[in-house]
Length: 122
Image 1 (cartoon, rainbow, N blue to C red):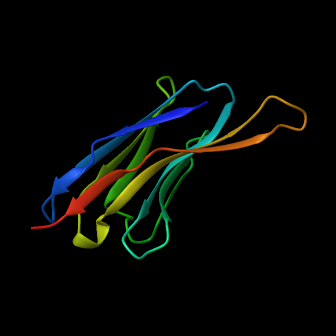
Image 2 (image 1 turned 135 degrees about the horizontal axis):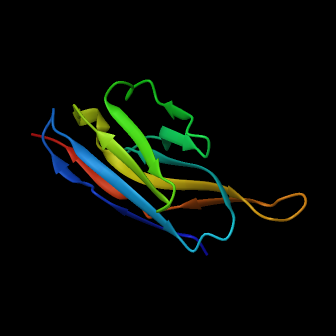
């Protein structure tokens, strides 16, 4: 089973920065994309940023210009650099991995991390 281990969450003041990391282990399939989602209290889980195996990226409108997603393919690690943080960024952030298997047709897999709390407050 693929395991996603996250780090970097915590408490930060408005305008501050955090860098989230997520490392995937025991990968036995082909990684198609990795991304970050978040869920605030009383809200649905939403996509924050996504990066594909071909290095295409996608961001939520609310974080464009402030957040940057990147990936170290050799280490199976994805990062989320979060700058100019706002109170509305407060949420549990989840790492996600999308993959396909080696079968014909290939099976589809989707894995989630446990989530890490990001709190932006004075």
